[in-house]
Length: 244
Image (cartoon, rainbow, N blue to C red):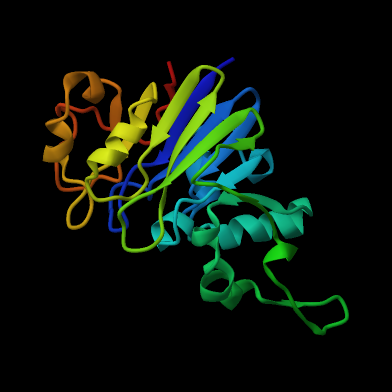
């Protein structure tokens, strides 16, 4: 039973070289996107993963910054008009509570009806919501998903995805947080962000014990550094990893 993660994007919001950070997670014939930046279909196509929107079983959303959710409108419209189905959206309620009214409604809240009339739509017309819980794991297909808040400008959720005895940890966007690192350390593969400002400095991660660094890969990194020879390996866009 393969447990594979493919980074469709590894960059930050300002990258000229890479797509915004986004992961395709596959296990037991179930496919999950972690975050959904624009242009998500092009990202999947260029990664040669042989996956399109119709193959995705669920989208897990960590937070509402545009470099993580800007592809949701196009993803949901494709599902609605082409596939004629809803998108299974997985997130903590504190993340989703402002998604429709403060983001998606501007471009999705009105549709032209078959008789030329304007029809008002809402979140439930496009999405099937599956809430994450900070106190207990959430079942999503074959996965058990554990969630934890991070230190970020807006509500953001770190994740641990369990498939049988194997586990993938994802920091999402966060400041350096020793308690979060400890929480992620149960995972066989840890994907952790690094960047400037309020993000996690690389030097803080490089100072972690070797046993942690060996299981860690970097994502959301800036363009202006050579990531080919670092104490922690950087994810390469479009190159899949097997969760051991």
